[in-house]
Image (cartoon, rainbow, N blue to C red; front, side, top):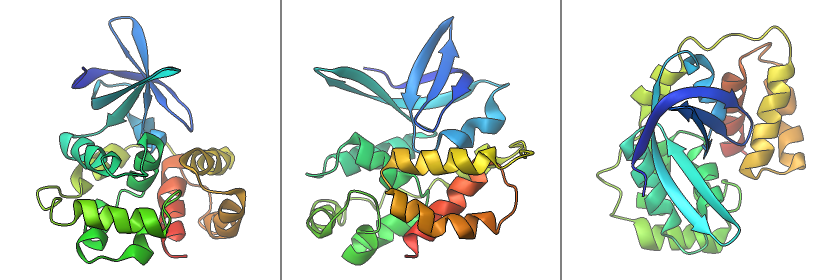
Length: 203
């Protein structure tokens, strides 16, 4: 079982990053691949969770141990798999997620892709009172967002839209918030994605 890996990000896609260490490139599924855009020239430490199934061996990556622990709590809930867990965590408002569970705010929880009323209620039932030791990793998120290069075209918007699709949002949902994203002007993909997830949670 892997705990973490230290290496350099050599490839970023809407679905995963490739982290190279000792000449081996590891495909790592993360909630927001583009948060690593400004970190390709330095070593990154990524905490891992391995999921082994008959048809695939997958590595899920997290920027810190608290983020990994929150993910493990989420996938312990019936109805939430690893993909849904990443989609829930992609908004990076982990404090808001924890507050919603503690306050039994099922309506807030159903705004995440793949989370219906039944799953939201199960999250509250299983996790309420068990997340007090986990805090939103805002400092780590902000640190990783620094020095992200600003793009010169709207290719970054297209990449953000593809990343939203990878997280499970429908084409209809993505089209609904696209005008709001276009109003932001040219932004890094990571910034588009952050704002898109905020807009999704306000629907």
